Structures are given as structure tokens and as C-alpha cells.
Length: 131
Image (cartoon, rainbow, N blue to C red; front, top):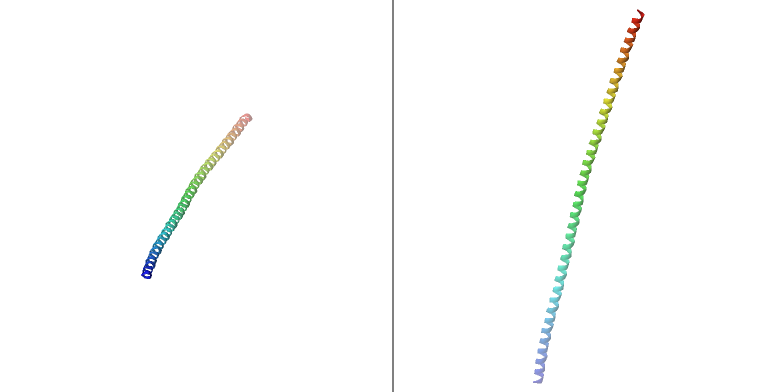
């Protein structure tokens, strides 16, 4: 009987060892699965953060491009306004110069006619004195 009981004890111990190994294996696989899932969550989180940062940079670049286009458009409007003002000033100066030239021409004609009239009067006076 001793051998039978020893064999049964050995068998029971072996079953307990197998059950313990099974529990240890399940605990290890559970821990390993949790670690892998945690790593996947962390990886996905990093990927989402990276993607979000990429979008933020893209949107910032688009805003910068739009700001630059608005700045260029404003500079072009300012340039056109400046050139128009310059053209108006140039036209005003040219009109003033033409007006002055016409006044001088008119004055020149007036002086010429006055000189001609004076010469006619002088000749008439001389004619009278000769008589």
C-alpha cells in the first residue's frame, strides 16, 4: 500500500504542479497581454499626437500663406494708390506749368501789342510834328 499511496501522492503533487504551472502560465500571458495592449495604446497615442502636431503645422503654414497673400495684396493696393497720387500730382504740376506758359505767352502778346501801339502813336506824333 505504501507504494500505491506514494504513487497517488506523487500523482497528486504532479497534478498540483501542473495546475500551478497552468496558473503561472495564465498569469504570465495575462501580464504579457496587458503589457502589449498598454504599448499599443501608448503607440496609438503617440501616433495621434504626431498626426495632430502635423495638422497644426499644416494649418499654421496655411495661415502664414494667407497672411502673406493678404500682405502682398495690401502692398499692391498701397503701391497703386501711391502711383495714382503721383500721377495726379504730376498732372497738376503739368497743368500749372501749361497755365504759366499760357500766361507768359499772353503777357508777351500784350507787351508786343502795347509796343506796337506805342510805336504807332510815336509815328503818329512824329507825323504831326513834321506837319
